[in-house]
Amino acid sequence: MQARILDAVVDTVAEKGISGTTLANVAAAAGVSQGVLVFHFKTKAGLLNEALLRLLDEYREAWRPALAEPTPLGQILALVRADFDPSICTRKKLSLWFAFWGETSAKPFYNQLASESEEERFQAMKQACEALAKTVHVPQPVLLAQSIDAHTDGLWLQMHLQGPEFGVREGLEAALVHLRLLLPDLANSIS
Image (cartoon, rainbow, N blue to C red; front, top):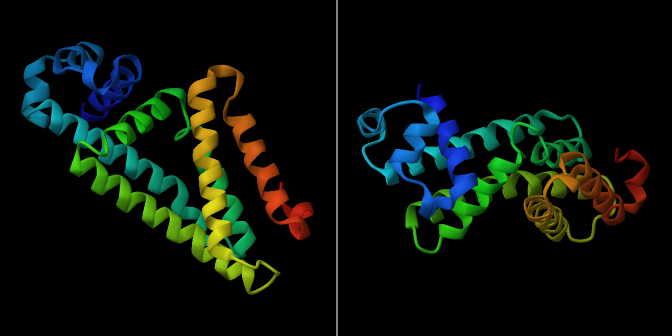
């Protein structure tokens, strides 16, 4: 039941934003009573906190397997592909990501969780780029990692704003083209 409720949060925030999301409209979307929400989550803040935790956990589960790739380039590619995994990168979930990111300055809990999650994911990309620099010429591996992650974030924003005409497939292809530009010596290996 909690999964159904948290799915309803994704739907409701995507439609109404965080400020327009209420226990009543989440309960209606989930097909449960408000009492059930209060029992499980206590307040709207508790419900939203749990939704953010779930979103961050799903994302972590999507990118962590990339670390098992046997080569640094394989890890980088797998990390980028994870950002465009259809279970993570949906229109509704992008709406939720941007809604939470928009609240980080006002909500210390969101800021802490988002910062910790971003740092954990960035460290994975940075380590892969540093390992790649030991095998091929990469003058600034930290800058490479920052560029890859910043480009992915920008593509997420583009997908969020442009709607269906710029989807997961287009986003992933743009990310791979960007990698080929950043790593021209490895361009033939990036697909």
